[in-house]
Image (cartoon, rainbow, N blue to C red; front, side, top):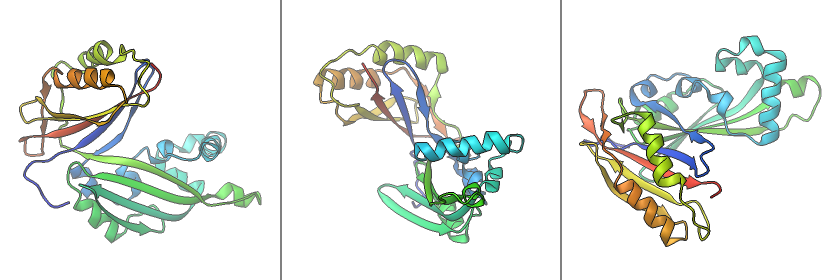
Length: 251
């Protein structure tokens, strides 16, 4: 995760071809990441969006609504519901992984050091092990629960379509949502880079759909995508930004 002259960030967009929904991944700018002191500084919506087993997610949401609803303006108030066992910060960049542990939601010096060295494009994963305080209070089974949330470090100003979100929606609807291919066996994944000039470059299928037809349509649609407004670093210099699109769901 050493300094680089050209920054590359990865943003994953999970798109349902039936047009139902889009799952947006959490991101943080490098400048804010370096100033983080608590895990909720990395992801303010950590507890509301943490990936948990379904039963534990439902119970945590129920306790929040039933008991402490008025106090949950800030995610840090989840501390009234849980006892931390451990908090692990994992940073992954160019297949290299570093991690460090804490005993609660306050970042340790080792964790802050990892975050301060994280370049644009680094994947940060917050892994939390905890117990419900309520279960212990009512002598219920108080097993350890594990949850996590991935966060990606992005440029100071991210790349975007020149004509805004509506153009993105129209383009994807026309070129991708209408793909009908019964031979597709799995969701294809395509990766591409928006250059300093706002052009799509280096487009490639990283996971095939097992259908040459679908893969070809997706690659052509991405390669011929309209021009973007390029990403910029904090000094206003245009930089590359990498995107990864997974085409999933029913067809």
